[in-house]
Image 1 (tube, each protein chain N blue to C red):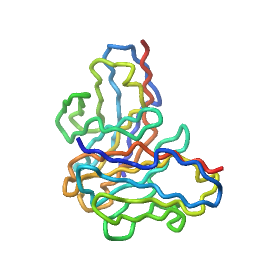
Image 2 (tube, helix red, strand yellow):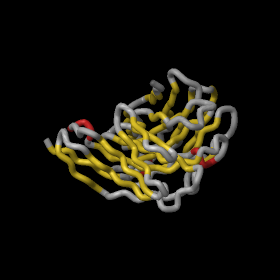
Image 3 (cartoon, chains in turn green, blue):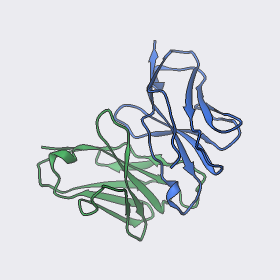
Image 4 (cartoon, rainbow over the protein chains, first blue to last red):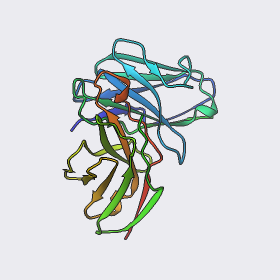
Length: 117
Length: 114
């Protein structure tokens, strides 16, 4: 089945550091990928839609200069949390759907737990 | 995005069937009904989806009401590994448009007792 790999699975770093999270579709191509954030005991919140070869589309209230998204190829999207602060600590999850398969489900990575000290 | 309503939590006993309800009274004709589940500290996992007819796969069955205003996810024999948050989500199949997004509600936390 379709697999989405997310790396790293856990990051602990100091305040002010920028952190990059990678999302790869391992056995399919994905023109569109999605980035979510989840705080403890809450549901997933969609942050942005990542589009291969073009700018990401951010949801209302998400700072695009804070959360930089690059979708450089049909199998890789990256999310960079710039100058991270403790309030950015969260569980970040990406998902992807196979290009041209609009009727198919999205496949999710296992998430990245980000802890900012 | 059309909204869904699910109970906050449900309990089941191991090896018994579980029926997880979902109401979606504002569903549009092109909205698919998707179910995902999320185990603790993991990303969501696809369970099943359907449009009008009931669907079966190796994980579960999806029963869709005739008017499509509600659906039920059926786990035929619950195991301890089925304990998770189950999300019912409507998604339009506009392949190139914004309705491809999955917007998660609060879901149903399923507890399975041994």
